[in-house]
Length: 106
Length: 235
Image (cartoon, rainbow over all chains, first blue to last red; front, side, top):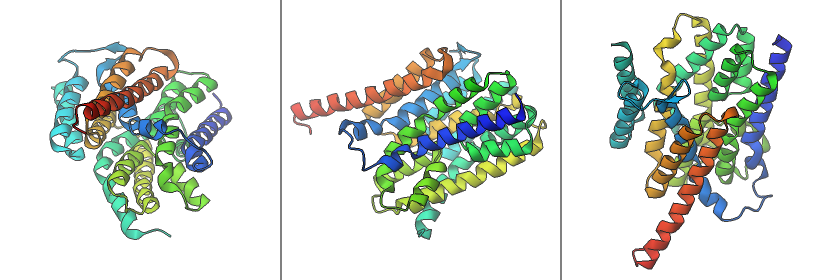
């Protein structure tokens, strides 16, 4: 891909992404939404985050890797337990990365 | 005008996330350098798109020599979730100037959205605009500085270190901090299962399907649970 094409690609993605972010902030008020939408909205963050997390810890090279040998899975489960018990972001990430490196490099 | 206390609270609220974002930004800068992008192009991406997962997808597809349209489509699908953030945060950002709406929309990320939406629910007295501005600006600066740092480090940090694993860990921490109650847990489980099962579908459709399934499962189970509570007099 030429530099010009790449510049064009990046600008299109940038504009599209901005329009997604801006869409309802701009339209709100001029748009009467049915009651169930705000109710459903509260489940958006857990659903999207979960859809990013599960494949990231379970899938390696397009295959599900459900095994104690999978460092991401083990570290992910430990991180889930730490997050659950402590609600501490820093501790969760530090423990998760620590376990991940321990299993990967030892 | 910006309420400094609210903006400071916003900035402070995202500081625990920085440790998860730094490796993400570093990886993004390092990969940009390894893919042969100029520093200018790397900055155009990190400032112009400012959405890490989609930036990493662009870099990966570039190194696979993917077609321009595939790159655009994939990045936009990944970022489609921003529309839902926009809808969810919109009620808090009314009655402010258009240029603030533009700025706050541009700078909104998974992290600043997640932190702010939970904070706003629990703190209706907050100055929403200032809080979100403080949170987003902090993350924006951290992101740009570390993207440049990553670019300059180039190939010194090997990708084998797996620092990108900090991303799902960040999401785990955000998720379990914010979600309380069975409907939320059901949304998490259903969405996670669908995401894994549908992960081999082309064009990142699995992510979209999983999100829709999770939202539906959460909403439906909430309705069922609240009806049960009412009929047995526990409401």
